[in-house]
View 1 (cartoon, helix red, strand yellow):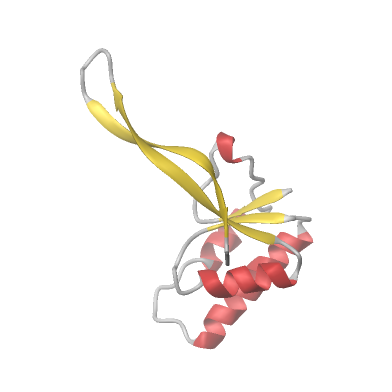
View 2 (cartoon, one colour):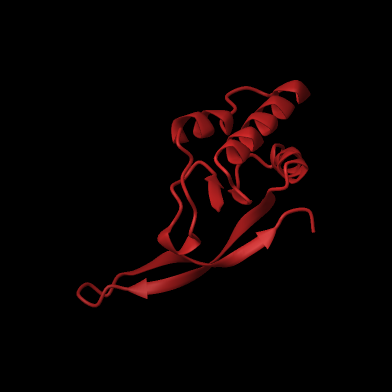
Length: 114
């Protein structure tokens, strides 16, 4: 089972389960002040524990760049594969208005710590 440990709701094409307490996960991914190393470790451990408690074997991760290496490490220590989503930007034109917008299309995952 793949769990979504990001701020956002996963797209249908990402095949992720949202954590039972999404707001808690979002809070752990949010830093309003410069975090101490202990704050980073605590958030990473708590996020990894949530994934483990919910039975995840994979976790889609993303957020503060300074948190991701530690989160990858904590997930791997629990046997959970950390994954980053990979998307391509595509231009889509509205046939009625002719207005072009960019949309991001999920195309796969890249494992962390390659």
